[in-house]
Length: 386
Image 1 (cartoon, helix red, strand yellow):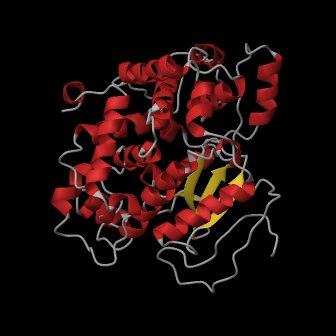
Image 2 (tube, rainbow, N blue to C red):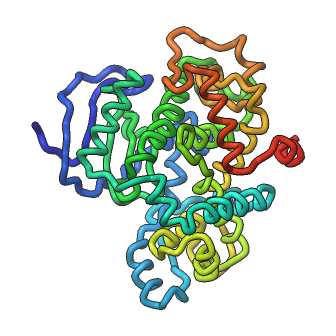
């Protein structure tokens, strides 16, 4: 067994010349991997060409721990002053600074429903997520999932504690790379995260590479709608798909936090989110996500990307009866609105669809369960989404 700085399964990367296969490498004493500046978001932010520095890297503050210490020492009254190693351009930040209140009522209802049943977020997390996993158990779960999906040997896997999200699927130096936050990896939630990152983002990205719209020119030529909110909405549905209680808590809290961030300073936001989350460390993480990209957090302002999850979920649920979910994955990085129009132009040979989409009836049953548990109705969604 060879010990390295990451857990990885080496193999061919997508749309690149194949690399020689190497032995599987495990590591049980991981150091925090440095974020590569050549990292691109795998299908996120619409960066299909992969030519730009990933926006999510540019807006990650470089002094988070230092500002966290100041904030906690101030008894949560200090407003962090964030710094950035490679700041995003002001026009890019401006584009992502407008929050919507369209689904605010639904986000609050989902969280209140969850708290009514479980009492607190912390109890909900423990009861439905289960215990945090050791690194070796995370690795075993990931390997089993990759075997099930037939993609063992295709994706590099990193375990880290230095991630604002629970996981991310990116392309680093041309290699598909899954980074998992070990501080949030729970036994009953991990497979949902793998359905989100591999079963949705990775497979849709893989299939996209064979399509006439695999680059910006192709997308323009065929008049494709933006990837989001479909991409993240679909992935978020897959995160909760087979849970006993598929509450859309995380998507709802992210949506709510972004909207409130657009109206409040950091310290005000932190106090406000306390209505739903008691743990200060968890609250801090959500507030940082909502305020990332901003330097002076004493001012109202948000980074609005985190509203895309609930937005996408509700749109997909609204049209669930008419969406061909098999084609939505097979056609690559497209909007659900483009499926019917593009299916005749698509290359469908050798397309890959995750195992959980094979049983259509079961899949649709679980979409109904998500509607029921979150007390969403078709009438409500039809009124909100035309």
